[in-house]
Length: 277
View (cartoon, rainbow, N blue to C red):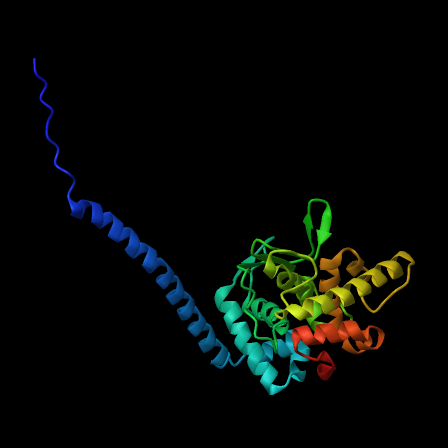
């Protein structure tokens, strides 16, 4: 018995080419869409930066963050623009029964964005959510005023935020502290070295900060006090957050006792808080 093998026509060239062309088209379109989205987002940010802020913001901040009255008109304009971007892109969530108000959002945003004044920096690109507790909260057994997570969240105690904003001379500001951590974490590592921009800046930064950190550790071990809080001796990441608080709230004392450290911070933050005293 003879077996007859059926004849199979070769697949149509159109059937082969169509999926291939579709794949090529997708590979070309995805990057283009991504670039377009980034462009639209950047244009929106630029519009927010240039748009006048709500008229009541300044009045609100005069009560919650009195030092805002000492900012120059240029600094206030820039701060208000950064705040608008911050509030448009970041989500606020109340925890522990706290109902988040506009006053809370504006007060947090103002302090967070003060760390960006004078710098051509993105508005905390890794941050998605700000979690606000009414008071000091607990994480396991430890009581906390705030935390910064490299997964896109900052946690703050509103009482601590409010107290730090009103008292701008004690060298303690939980909002500055946690958002300094966010700056430090932008490169994915919390090591006390934020993105400096220029390659030659890292060597000087490392030399100055290593020396100052080791000095604070020694002074703390001896029970001596410094203009910087002893918590900065915990590790390099906490040192950067603590010296940021000190730089903005006690600039004159920091400059007198640690001039080279002050100069590194002034070069990084592009402002001189002595002007606001």
